[in-house]
Length: 292
Image 1 (cartoon, rainbow, N blue to C red):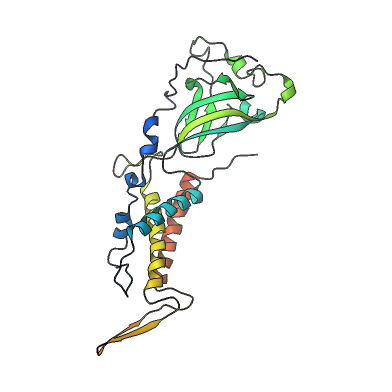
Image 2 (cartoon, rainbow, N blue to C red):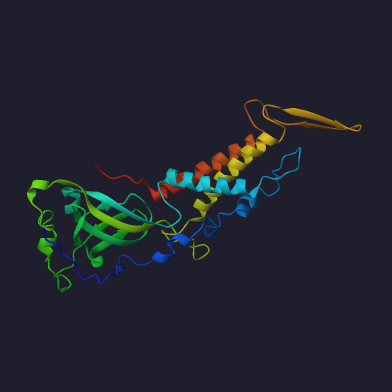
């Protein structure tokens, strides 16, 4: 087997793949960096005191925090995206049709902040490391393609343009016995997926969190808080209540029934807002599906 290297010199960042984030700081980002905080959720129910009317106790911050984390996870699944940056290593199968279409690879996560390594493997060993100058990274779509530049740019290398596009198994030096139409997990891809906090108010880049995504997450977390509050207003399935103490009485009537909580009207409105935001965001991010 022949192993072919390139003159990448360890730097994966080129014109078509700029460095958006320091790889050493990827795990330092928190939800608070995106404004997804307990105070943000509380601000969105300004004027509504979410407390237990019997004790006056507020919902604890830990409850809000857990609902924000759950809303982020739900939004990621709904839109097929990732939010907090993360380093991902994955393998993709070889299909000759994809390989001959500029080695098109659809990553499993999007958006892509930056790619860091793309190579061809066989038997767990690297046999060709694709030069960064070949990479064509589509951040929002989560796609990679290759456009060989040997000879076109006068580079010194072991492959010319014809050889680069002759395809596997020629490029890999592998026998035809492994199949020339399909091979499992031959492409090793490393990249940083996720998005960054907006750097400028009113302007959002494709790799940054958009305000409507932030808004949807906050509303989804707020919905969970209202559900809990609706259970506390009077009590599950109770529509009115009278309290009497030392000759002083208080009567509370609500629209709550056995089927609907005390905050159902607010929840219905939140559901409409979330659906409207989701529709626009889904159109923007698209579906993370490959073509078979």
